[in-house]
Image (cartoon, rainbow over all chains, first blue to last red; front, top):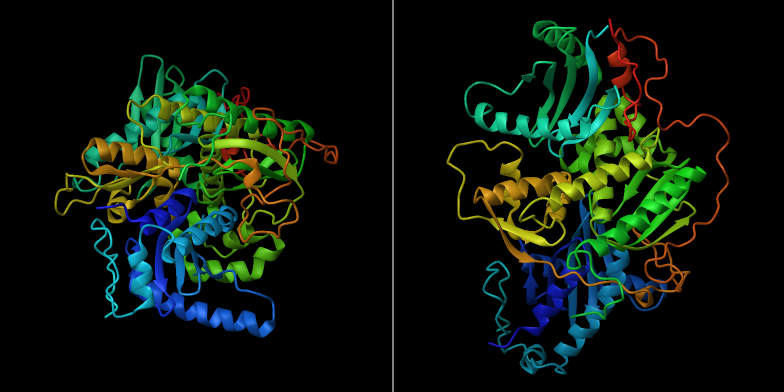
Length: 155
Length: 110
Length: 334
């Protein structure tokens, strides 16, 4: 089976930036596309991220400060950051208190761009893009080694 | 007066690090400290919680010239501190050394 | 995805030379600060990199993504309960009085706090020294340390402790990399009903194949070096196994944004101006104002505090800093 390019991209971000614990790629309405998570429920995470992103974009637009970059929730024990990925998807990541946020700002740009390209079908997984465009098609499988990273079927 | 004490150190068990030290130059405290930390850890493993004998309290190592007394100052899960004192055996004995160190310990981490 | 490599070999693969450069750069920068009694924020660029808060040439605090600071240690370990911490923070953080206020409220003893602060400094210097340092640059203080060690630590002592830890790990036949090796429960389960010592229960609960020692340090509020040693012991006993490795890529100077980038959320190094010195050459540290004259507060043990009956006790009370040489014969003798 060909390597999953989306998951590889997400894993690479976790390798490059110290302090990222979990990541999930989802559609704008909160349905999981891929998840690289441990103990966190990816579907719940994606649903909340979608809501936060929607709200965040409205806020940004209301105050007229340009396009939204990221939404960050900062707690005593860590961070949750959400990014728009192209027009149809979002990336949410969970970090601990030692998250290298400087490196994150830089590296996340690269990852988001690559994910966007992959989803748009410029990568090998054009079926994923088709899946997003037509919600009735099931979304592809996830890696077997993380059973909690369950992928929701769209249909 | 702490009779016969040549050097002393507060040691973190988890890392073997000397947190505070005092005494004569020439005693190789960092090496002794790391060793005593290992000793304390082994002793805890073979004698301590789970074996019914209570928590580790003290280790004494006696050579012909020295008494090395290691007292547990604090013990939390995965996080213990020791007081290590190096005595000149000619100037004290084990009982006296133990008493004196026992008197010191409550005040050390006020 | 492989970023192009610079001339500097990565620490882990190139044996001594990469690490020698890292240690030399950091050591030179810190000792230079000490000699000039500088105060400010020494930005350490590299992986993990970080910021060393220097006060009168001594080290008061270190912020790095590579190891949990004292605030994370106190909170995550449960040493200081969260409501108490929050209340203290609200009242005292802005004035830099967090430590004093924690002690005043009885949330921690002053001696205990000093131990935690020193241990966190040692852990952070270990994280810096065992990683890669490309440049050190002294900058004016952006955000001062939340829990500074006062009086600050002697940089020579701190560097010596860092070196000691590196040597201990280097002497192990099969060391665990605290920043790369992700651990999973091993084939041996602990015997039912036994309480494992050394925090092993906490480690096993979090060992899901996704966390390195560094990650677990932040999760548990434990030191990274101590966890590394424990991981090695547990692996030996079959309780843990290394399930995957983090592939670390190197940052190159052109990755950094130009100066003027807004301050980041955390205290990790802000992208600096391009044009770092050539690899292996330490950046020249800008001269700072010399501290006002007076005694060094860093390395004096037990200067005449009243109240203790024992000379030894006096020497060991909070504030008596262990230096690279143990101070001369002041031990009480008959």
